[in-house]
Image (tube, rainbow, N blue to C red; front, top):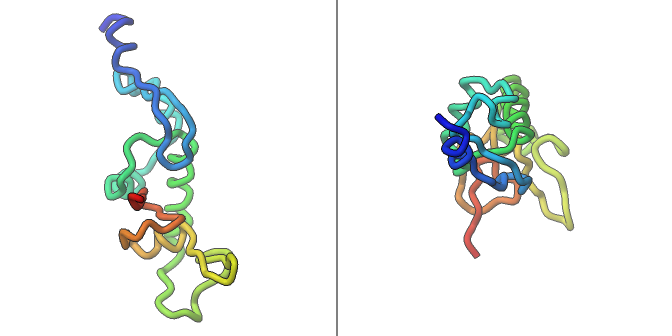
Length: 124
């Protein structure tokens, strides 16, 4: 493959999670920024359930870490089991569920939650 055709397969993208610009090297995946992050099969499987396309290396590392931490936790099935700062925080008198809470929940509710771990954005 010559340099011109390889460049043609590189795309400037914006990470859908953090909005950071990056170059996706779909024509040279071994040298793509995402190859800098070792992602487990568990993380690959999780990301396949999301609405995300390519993510930047920082967001890939974030999800890898989040899934590792989640292994030691269960979804809190009773209000008393919710831990402020881990599962939720309070803002203007409302409970805001964290990414960690949504990950433990295991599915997307489709309501456009602020910290949706599945990448769902409600159309306005």
